[in-house]
Structure formats: structure tokens, C-alpha cells
Amino acid sequence: MKTATIIDLIVDSNVHTQSMNHIIKQQHISQRMRRRLRNDGIITVNGEPASWNTLVHGGDHLIMKLTPEQEFSLSPMDLDIVYEDEYILVINKEAGILMHPTSTVRDHTLANGVLHYYQQTNQHYDFHPVHRLDKDTSGIVIIAKTSVVQHAFDKKRTHFHKNYDAIVEGQLPTNHISVQWPIGRKPGSIIERCCTNEGKPAHTDITVIESNTIVKNKIEQCFTHVQCLLHTGRTHQIRVHFSWLGAPLVGDDLYGGVKDEILDRQALHCHSLTFIHPMTKKEITVVAPLPKDMDEWIKAHKQ
Image 1 (tube, one colour):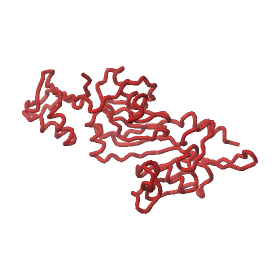
Image 2 (cartoon, one colour):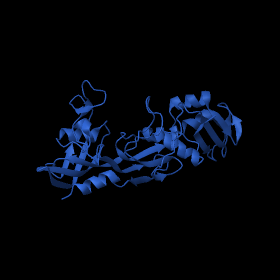
Image 3 (cartoon, one colour):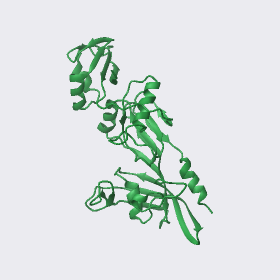
């Protein structure tokens, strides 16, 4: 039976005698997860079977495991791991890869690949994404190794300093733009979003890296490479803000962009991420260079 480790800790040596419930509450675990551990958890103390009623003492080695709520198959995948410790796995996700299985796609998602990696490296963890990227967006993704760590990111309201690279159609009016247009669901669509006063606050800071104009079929075409700093994390935020600026992302046909033979997806890449690690309290910065398809597109469209 497959299990995922939820808790693996040495009880503080200053603890004399405490209940299992008291120890678990100190680990920033949600009430729902505590309920699952109490009802279905596989618990050992110093390698011996234990229960929720077992008392623990300083120096005890406590392990709690659960069977995953949802079983995913394992798919071998060439993961680009940019950072890993005992709590998190940070991956530079390729474009074209879904985050996790859906009702129609069951294999070859990032979740399938991460679980295969855990098996190959003898790590007994499950898939707990801290944040998500669209299928056709590449770049940095943080995966918590346990639900405890995932909950710690949420409980501590971890602030992420997220930078994205994008290529957009047209030329922007200035080299620095701060867009603060609310975003909500587009009426009549379950996928598209739009800028609307009824939406949630959305804030994107844009910096122009370079602009290039080429002549194709006797028509001038301008494209701009930009970097975006996100202050909020609305669905399709960057894609919607550029569409409403009149400069849709190259390849983003959902929001007015045009695909071509080099770039058949939206030109969007999560380039860097800085955050305070909720478990170690250290500042972490991870970087993923511009992917090959976007780099080649920029080179091909320079004069």
C-alpha cells in the first residue's frame, strides 16, 4: 500500500510528556488534516506502532503517514530541478505540461513526473503544489513535499516576488507601466477572464527589455520583450492585462495573439521567484533562464 509521509520529526528534548494532538497542533497543520491523521493515520513512535492516544516525550522520533486521497500513475519525466531540500521541490516546468491529471488527461502531467522522481529517489512524499502555471506557460513551480509544508506557505501568507518574461505584439507607450485593472470571469465563458470593475484587484508592473520592428510581406510588425512583476495572482493576469493594453502575448490566441511556426503557445515564462521559506525562515531566490522557443523567437525577429 502506497503511503505519503506527513510528519517526520524528533520531539523537542525540553518536552517532558505531551499528547499526540498537542504535538501535531504545533506543526501548523490544518484542522482537516489533523482529522485525517487521527482517523486514518499510520503512526509510529521510535519505530513502534502508536495511536492518537499515545503520549510522546522529548527525543521521541514521531512519524505519521497517510494513504494519498488521489492516486496518480507514475510517468518518467526529465525534470529540470532548480532547487530541492527536505521540504520543497522547485522545478522549471516545460511548456505543454499540465500541472496535474484531469478527467481526460491522466498521465504525463507534472504530478505524474514528480511522483516518479520521488519513487526513483526513495522519497515517500505526495504532490502538493504551492502555486500553479497554465499548461502552456513555462517556468518556476514550487512543490511542497507534504501537506504540512503546503499549509505552512498558506498559513504564513508567504509573499512571492514573481518575475515573468513575456513577448507581446506591438510597442508599449512607455518603458515602465504599472497596470492595476481588476480581473474577473468573462461573461458566458468558464475559461476566459477580462478586466472589469466587478473583478478582483490585479496589479502588474511592466518593464520593457527591448522592442524590435521587422518587415514581413511589406508590412511592419513590432514586437516587445518585457518583464513583469506580479503583485497579485489572478487567473491569466498577465495575459489579460496585455490584451487590454492592446498588446496581446505572441502565440496567445485565446486573448488575441497569433501563433507561428516557432512559437505555438503564449510567450510567457516565470523567470524568477523570491520568497521566505516558511520552514527554514531563509530567503530563497530561484531562477529559470528564458526557454529555447522564446529565445529562438526573439533572435528570429531581430533586424
